[in-house]
Image 1 (tube, rainbow over the protein chains, first blue to last red):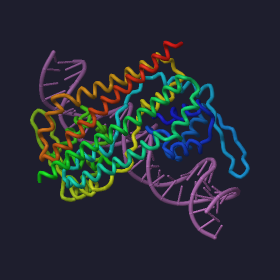
Image 2: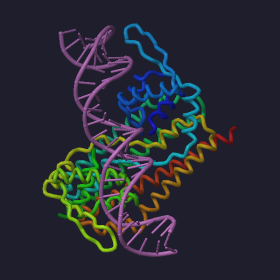
Image 3: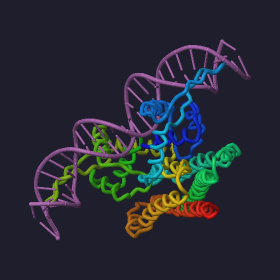
Image 4: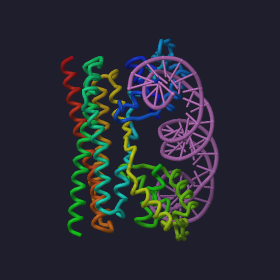
Length: 182
Length: 182
DNA sequence: CTGCCCATGTAAATGGTTACATGATTGA
DNA sequence: TCAATCATGTAACCATTTACATGGGCAG
């Protein structure tokens, strides 16, 4: 139940179109969230209907027209209210880890291969998090406070990926030691 | 789309009742997954209908009867097939972090308080992951390989919580330095 | 006799993915 | 001329949460 608030948060930073948000998600701009265009456009309709955002049609030449949404006073109030609430239900769902826990039926070599694939996914994410492109966004922070928050969230993703890769390496080693014993 | 497979994985370890699984989730036995009883019982019906599990009524005195499910041959085949597949869509959703990224409108002191609450949640989880109760489960591993996998998943949770707490501390310090400057 | 634990369910709502659809424009 | 990008949508499905419900047993 957070996508509407997440979008309000984006509009509070800057007015933008639904498509801008779709693209931001597609380029995995937000390490800890994902949404598809279906969900985004539906949520935008809902937020507009609740008068939390306000759409302005922008005609373009070359490209189709698009609606630029801005946050309204009501929307901002709703956003602040949500921001102030304690964040509960922070439980994570990690498909890879739970599959791994149940994988004892597979050959050790096969599990090692899965860990390798997992590491590759993490390295890709890490690569983007550490890119100049990502770092470039930080300059758009509107205050020292915002800059700290944005840097911290990027740092969180980097630390997560790094530690997860290290853990995967350690697990691979344990499994290969097992292979040698057999 | 993994709960059915997750449950098959549990039944492959040992036959058990729906209620056993409900309780396991309630006591957050599985750090990286959660499900409610509604979802569990519905999934059990589905798995039974697909003949992937097989229920046996167990009469008890004192307590109501319960159905103990075991995995069938078909179920085990389906489980193995899933285990062999590469695990994609490992993207995480972290409500706390995304809220934090949007929190620049809040006072630094308020954000520091949120980080404190987040740390408390993590410390609770960590406490359980490091408990004797949790360690006790490891002895039920049916092979050296399974033991490595279970230990690794617990270790993964411990590392995650530990690093996340460290990161939260560092972020709190940055924010309090900002407070001093004002 | 009140309230919690056992054990299992239904109904309704929300959240999220996948597939299908459109129609203009631009670059290879 | 073929495919990709821009921009937005619907329909159907699957996943998940919240609320409501039952009925016996047991402890305080």
